[in-house]
Length: 607
Image (cartoon, rainbow, N blue to C red; front, side, top):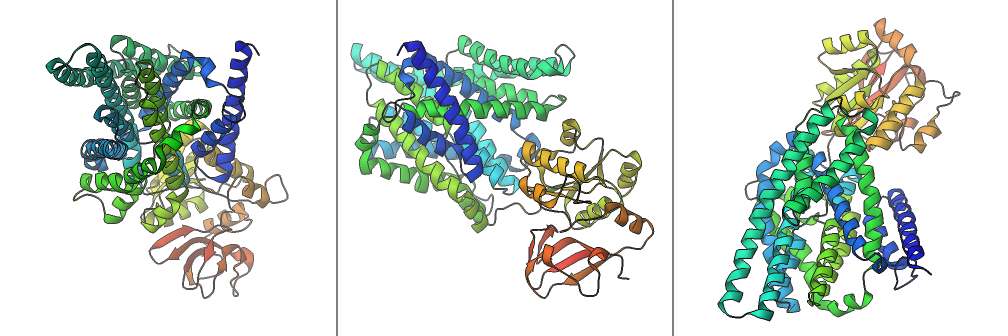
């Protein structure tokens, strides 16, 4: 087979397998990197041979570099500066004290257990300082933890990618210079030059990366706010700009592009750009595609024999990094900060991901070209840590969050429909201390909601711009309670599919029409108020002051959809809130209840 055909086959198979693994991971609610890694190994030259990464030559390293640039730009773009303020000390300590502990501790473990020389051990330590943002984000989408911990993990992931990558570049240059000197000089020169080179590489690269990234980001922000570029082309302009920034920074000073693209994302975040969340989603989808292809290609490059060489010593190092060094780094970084349970959770969740893998692969290629074959051991050790951390932490994140009491309680609620029923529900939630926003395209409804001191957004709930105004990316619950069942269903479907809101509850009026309970279940939602509801009927009853709010303590257990109240006809009452000790739950068809729970209801018959 000709080289061009092998390249075509490798790319097509990698794309198809990568996307298929993403779909499989989404269905099984597991980290996609696990499946991408397995697919790459099985399809690579050591098993099926359908993917031949080696034939791509230098093109593979270019593809990896540009993909990492896009991934890190998306991370910088997605960082929430407002939420960062509440945990800035913790994040700062994690990125200074914690990072230093991780680098030194991992390097010492590698040096004393495997016997690698200090520079290569330090390179492994710098890789371990890079937290897997591409693993953390899917985990946080599946497991809704409290906002402070989520911000710490995301911030650590974004900043550690930049710091760890730059630190790795500096260590790489230290190794290369040391190797060069050792073959041409000895004595004091070999001792002094590497240290000076290391310090120069680190500080100059940081300076160049920050300057280029911030300046290009501010310029791009002004372009996006102007009418220079049409709406349909803005996403493509940003994509080209990110790659251009990466290349420009690397041209000014080698290996600074990674930090530059992160700063570009930060700079854009400071600008008031229309439809910023639309841009974030576009970059997020591109990142997923690039990750899918690249991780399959990188995994296909792995050699089974290298894992055997590590043996039990390699396994011991991986366990020390995950179970000893990470907890020490977290606890020492948060003395006087966070609760013990929060620290335990952060100690457990610190997976490595695509950036560690890609940088390790690139550096191994460069070091082997210089005759440093031991670099393969570092690469294999990095992948071993990735595999174990992603599997163990990805699969147990929800259990760990529940055990540490870190799951989000209530969160931010969006109610679609500012009619009288929607306003009553919103006020009940607000009285319980919840943050609520209502959306409606009826100006009178919005005026009345505003008079009730409710956060209100006027506009079409199916419009992405309106949803972004309502800050749907922060929402943990969306309740759609307009008189139109189809609108309710579509609003919840958009919230679920495009914005990863896990809890969506549309109110359904006439089940004989196109929208019914089974269709709601197919999008991962549940019926609001536990049953089919005539919204107009209840609006009129409320307007005529024929509805009251009452509480009922439940004496049994089951599902709310099966609950009856003897003294009331089924259509004369609807459950709204379920109270269980200090917790509150919106009443939906799948909501279980226990003996002793208190149900807050609306009724046309009581009072």
